[in-house]
Length: 327
Image (tube, rainbow, N blue to C red):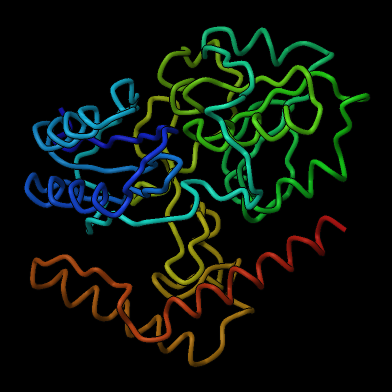
């Protein structure tokens, strides 16, 4: 059996003192060697972590002992090697960024649909099915007949809705995302915008893959996850995609056969956007990773000067290319 537990979790609940909450959670994670990232805001928590069975259980016990978190749910998968190298607990304005003030899933939210009932809902002709995730996630895998909003970040979702959805024309809207958190905010906001019947997949795609047998599934492809596994298949096992370390795009085996692919340096999605300085920076990073591997060590890899700025620029370039493709 795989030795590493990977736990995805979120919970909307008021947190009165986020800084003290953050410090206590970080201490527990360090003590029990749990790695990954947890975001903390006044509206709740969100994160994915990995560690031993005992370590993850200790963290979950600590979280559920906090006010408002007694009913915290999480989703688990397993890996032979833990996908996270760092332990991070960060303060944020929102635990998932929609960018609209006043959206409160604790006040109003759409109708939850259990994974076992999801197929019946999305097969209905009077329901429009929306994938609330980003375009690169959609391209890896999605539900059959799902609409792609062609967004590069969740902040763009409201603009998509204003331009493409109308409560009078689309009275029944079903939405889904990886673990459920985006849909908490998206359905809450759509209710505020006048959409009466708004549904969302309880527990997200990960819960669906866990509870619905593959031969009955309406899922097509793999599911992008925000950790070292890159994607998971229908059995929640590591998928067949890798990640470009220059632009963070998921890349397939066909992408890696491209002349524009160089391990750790570039891929077909970012090759034409890289400067000579970018390539030199990524080559140095890859060199340091290989040296660390030869020493039997793990290299964290993101501390090279200019790397984060480069990735932000590549993300903007990819976003502009996506807009041109859609237009």
